[in-house]
Length: 451
Image (cartoon, one colour):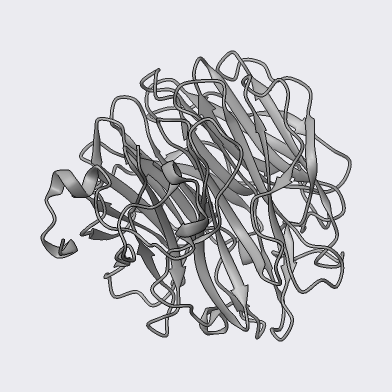
């Protein structure tokens, strides 16, 4: 089947041929369909030269409608929409930024149960030096990503960092946003939270749902029925600091952090006590490359209730490899399995993991894989209802050189801190940035699985 002539229905339903690399080691029902690689599709044909930290959402009212967003090296945020399951993409240019605030970052996106698309991001305060004061904003689209409203403020401007957004699919209009706050010199120390009941048009007063004396960061949120809200963050000395000068902390890159979750069973009215689910690494180091890469954790909840999965990197001191660990809860976050590796025991550095759960209960874990100075995107799949994973499927057409990525301004390479993974019926959709063009551009692929 020629992927350029596949029908819209077949593409959206995940019947486009996918990668067979390493598929021989996969469980039969989790094996990618077909004997060829999934086509890598470029998302960012917008003329910009640097795209980082992408996110991806699928419209529950129309699984062919995908919404992607990212931050641009030039400062603003950008969104892209597909209406054929990711085969083609359109861009309407940068999102409308608040007056006097040209720079943004740390993007996330989701659709609520009514089909409203939402993009959340961090925005620098007007005139604020190096992001000393920033606010959390949300944009909404009611036409699948063709147009967006003016941004709505979730918070005021203060030294905060890394917001994340998730919606309740069974409760149209319910939107949950978290971020790290409570800045003290060198780090942030709290998780802020706010929610909307009208699809992101307005938000309630922000409140603090967790705090530590030192070292807390990289909060993310996921929602699952009935009324489950799950927040994940890293705590301890191994968490890179976040503050007015965007410092990266003074601890070695492989200093472990405690991966922690907060669970609410009442749609965010109350949260239980923090639960430690494992020790991981937020900052991963690479032999032969200057600097390090942040490797943020990720969390996802199943669409039918109960199953929640969290993933994170783990790298031992001075090690030339790093693994991806997964911890899971089958009872809505009340109890968790031990964090166990989903990547092989090899000399590869796996980092920037993402996790998604499809409508059959199959888990997908995506990661960057660094070996011999090159990076590929890999995807590990489980069988429905299982925590056992097959061998990595290589998604990228060919590996790329991360050293060609965006420069932070200090001579060190950077390709962002996270990538994206979403599901449609019968397929997983990784979204990532790579340098195959010589610049950081966005690419995606539809990786179908047997149902």
